[in-house]
Length: 83
Ligand code: SF4
Ligand code: SF4
Image 1 (cartoon, rainbow, N blue to C red):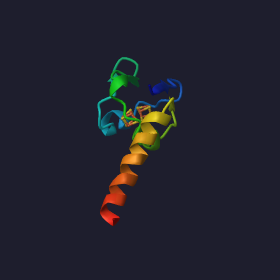
Image 2: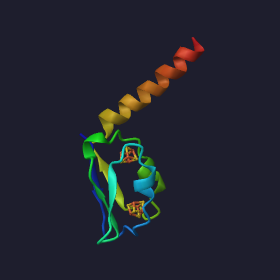
Image 3: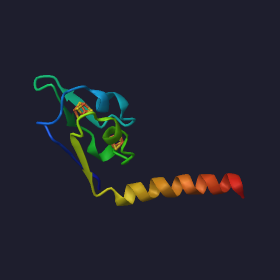
Image 4: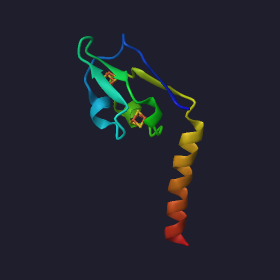
């Protein structure tokens, strides 16, 4: 299962990951002004949060299975439209 690690020293509390995650994996910790992972099981490893984070504050691990499924789905979709 995918793992997400937030570097709290790096996180600037912009909230972009909270707003952009399609599966509500993150929530802001208002007291700390940092993001926190609240629904890890819903992460589909799309890596949108990783792309948008201005501080490179998050790291994803063990994503190969979910990522592979995502790529396969895109490839199959493209092939269906070509063939
Ligand atoms: S990888 Fe995608 S689904 Fe997972 S936390 Fe980031 S934006 Fe959300
Ligand atoms: S996008 Fe990055 S800097 Fe902004 S709240 Fe999320 S982890 Fe922190």
